[in-house]
Image (cartoon, helix red, strand yellow):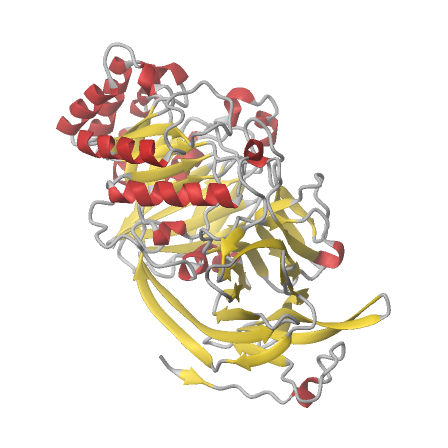
Length: 627
């Protein structure tokens, strides 16, 4: 590991840091830059006046150096700090030491996701402070070429249990921008889940309509940069967080889960034996949406894989009958048809959703046995368990009971079941975080894939537990079935748009939810595309687009590139280039036809020219290029 020192004389920064008061004999300003120097995170000591008394606190800010060489503010002065029930680590911290800035350069592989070979490459600064009780806290800051991450580590006697009362981390976003942000859902029979509509292009600082605030991730666009804020590396000793309702002057602050979530199961504040580490607060920063879309920063800072042999973990596509016919999961003969359909489509799996224990005409075990002969793996739906939700769907109380869960996983493994879909979590509190992690570990011990549904957002667990195929934390198409407002909020898309989603969506298991007969009615070239399109990628590139407008992505698997675009409400002609593509290669594109249910296909030899495609309102296109 290479080491380097950066010595900064405070007097040189007086012109930039006029708001700071420097204390003689103390270090009070530090910074760490990304390997290529375009991202800088700075930390300093600020004096505050409260009721006539002065105190010091740590703050940070982040800068982006643009391609033109201009240094712009990504985050303005933002607060740091955390309080335990027994003591605080927010004000009047005493500086102890700063480790030399160290370089991180770690290569790792991902079984599924946007990129198979990843590089966790950045520079790290660790600062140690003590509070008035002489207890120690470390602040760990990392600067990457595509953003920054930081977390807190509170040391102490390992047998001492503490409760985190509040985390004072904030993100002061420049107010000259707009945001795409998701209201955090209140506790209910079906939530909270990440199933609200995003508020789009609203001014920075806009308050949430609900007192419970905003959910991660949050996307901002200022005059100078694009920025996504989220968290990663969430472990057993903490809860998942969201953001407070008010963001005065663009300052967004951390908020813990609500006390009434999951029907009161678990505590809203984290409790743990020391040492306590917070999740990484992650801020992805770049001059275009490409940085946000292509970044692997969430998995870069997450724990390495806990599964040594991942050869049994196989991403794939699954037939799925429930979305168009809820009762089909209780019909043995219907599930057999979907196994046959998956086999005909060269897919790998078939999902039997809620209600399968009540199957008539045969059993789940019978479907699994039949599917094995077709080389199709069966995935089974489960509730998260316990009494956190009132729903009659079965199976019910297995996942939350560690003894029953392990016995069930053993049984599934012996039957040849390949994976599980677990639904209804309803909180990001520490109790539920531990349930997620327990399910992932026990499933890995029995070689079972996992899909979480009605769950929290992705926080990097699919690096730590690569048997985690997907986290379905969205307001998705199932809302067309029971929410009368949804069609107006999300108008129906056309066939080419839906085909493009097989490339745009990022999931280790892609569930194909339409009726099998609707797929088979499509042109042969569409069926062939759905047979061949991968679900795990070697690399991903942003081509063009913005939220609420359109998006074009290119993804590579082996020697084949796939390209897809989706459109919003207005018909548009898009023109773009593929810089990775050599002349003489054949491109085949399936795009919008004359109406919402028609396709147009064309194939040509690429000669380096622009690609021009017309997309209908709510339309799209998909295609592939063989290298």
